[in-house]
Image (cartoon, rainbow, N blue to C red; front, side, top):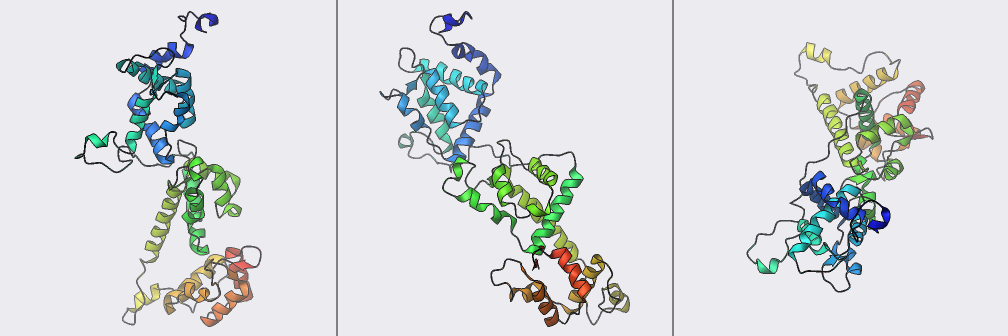
Length: 350
């Protein structure tokens, strides 16, 4: 084959085998094995079974083409140079074993043993006193860091808007994606229990698609895309939770009203006796003042109309809640609330 190509390869040597020493020098082999172990460990793949069809005599060896084919199917994210580096390493190691004739020159048994070290040590029956670590502890866990984008201000605005929507609509963001990472076939798409989903799954299960433009969604996807092309929704949920925590902490900075408070402190508190609001922000300030003065629990009042705890009720039920809480709102005020928190179909995200 090599002689027929006219490239000066020795007889019986393929072009890939001729490039093997150069590929071994260009690739960091320990880091490459860590990547392979991480990919195999996340998906719980049985490495040895991929080579058994190529080795009917169970000699632990296969040809270079068979090794290339099996590794490419096991870890499809590897490049040609990285597969060639693995081939070079385990072909060179084959000289230490029993002499085998061509073309079975690659020791897949050594490759399988090295990769399976991420699960457990080999030949434990010969080391009964060995302290066995938990599977996966040998992986270098660096954690996921969101990628930097050009418009960071826009990203922070999107995250704050998501935090506001999750708070007002009672949505738990991470639970919207957990079915995608916990199903029986999820390991074929993304790591099980890894906090990641595919881009298509992210578009399908993101709960606020209608509230954001496509440009905002693309910006969000670029920020939380991993090296493997998945979306790390767990990191997104963590950032949104931090914003919600900061907002809750800032709202707790205002001291509660007390009968012992001084006149100046009482004047600084919001009061329910000022004029009727004219804008949506004034309406929210008005309601905050009433809730603070009367120690009202709005969430519990709405639960009587939302047995399934979806965070959704009707506008008439909002009027009933306000009546029970003795909060007088005009039709204009209700229209403002419907504009802020309505779904456009008669629903109200309390």
